[in-house]
Length: 352
Image 1 (cartoon, rainbow, N blue to C red):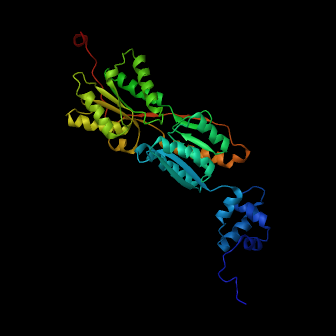
Image 2 (image 1 turned 60 degrees about the vertical axis):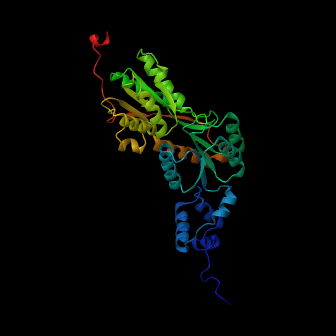
């Protein structure tokens, strides 16, 4: 008779035999369940290590009805803001010993398809949705399907949502410019792409209005332009603002990438930054630090890490209905670098 034990793959029965415990105890140790005495747990772990035993993950997923994967839905994931959030998300998911499944969204049809299909397909244990607020029907469908979902940089009253106070961030940026002598401030906002309903653009405009109104200044609509959320959009909008006879002395851009386009436009017109033009961006991407761009820093790492933490809490607690939805509001901070200058006070002779 051949020795079938030679080179055979170890099983849970082998671990049970070596550790001198029941199969149920081995299973509880593998799944990190409570109720196992420390000495017994250590004996089982030692047997697993000695046998180089690897649990059958497919069988475990069939029993637990979990895949060990976290889905991340994100629009335009090649843009720096999303890349930096995804970097934190990927690290947190890896640390939690889960797999990341990325769904990049370019159109509203793609978004709606994923929102509709993923809860039914159960390819992932939960969804982290970045910057894409679902409508009430989609959010209700997630809840009805029992799919754990956390929104990052988006809000729904039915789902746990992590948002940054964009109104406050824009307010602080414009207020700082006003406090440093600027009265004609250009604003380059981002467009609301398709029907994605990005609220960030509206919030940053509200913050601008708040700072201007508080200072007793008049809002000048011709100084507020909308552009694509990219370098080219920022450059085109800046050229419109900076070729005016009464050009602004400062520009606030709704994203750092747009602000980099402003720098390009200023350079092409021989306008010095910050000598002739002050500039503040928004997001705090890595490139802003390299270019010494003043910006409103979003806590992107915290957004990604906390989003994953809240989602895994839901996945682990999904058997009892999960925790109630939370609204978590994170605060941005103003990062002052070398693109702002203080204007001298206007004398009475000059002003009359």
